[in-house]
View 1: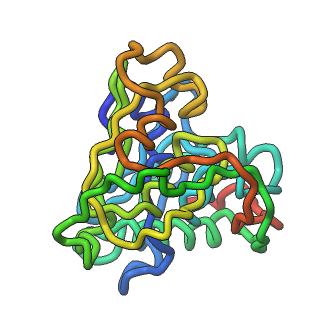
View 2: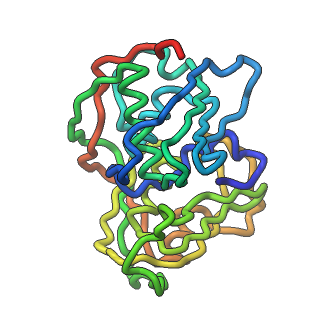
Length: 264
């Protein structure tokens, strides 16, 4: 999903989940194997390997919970210390022969977390430090997609970070501003991002910016050659939008119970 030498480190975090409703037939994996990630494995990845084989490797439980429920990691609290240290590999078979879209994959991951990790939680609205995505002074610079009335029938738009040593690109097609906030909070920032633009259409745009050590958990420290604007400036100059640091109410999960996985 992400093309670069750093892809395995942040692949899962860039997923742009667009909802939590499960498409018919994708309520749970047919079978799933869960194993501790080998100590000498440093990478991470998350993908549908074939039309009916789901694989995630090298992820902690807090990251997986955040992904499954489409939240920033900061919006997942509680739980024992091991959910941030133990890493797991998941290999699962999806039902039927049709490739599930991202909503279907996340629905099955949520069921697996409940069944195999005994995940229990409650939700709270918490006031947290957030970034609010708003419209900049001179208005948005977004091109409405010709197919903006409906989402891509194969799943969410391909809204991902494409990384190179000196530039990060987001080639968005049929994407909403809300979906942009999802990948920003999942990968780029360590806090939630709220869509306060009021925009509801789908857009085609290409965002380019220089990475720095404050983004992606420091994974790109020292990258960037100074010829591209930073993320905040790029969003304003290229999209006509603005990120504002503020406080806001965030839907969050408070873990009440969780166990190491049951045997395969």
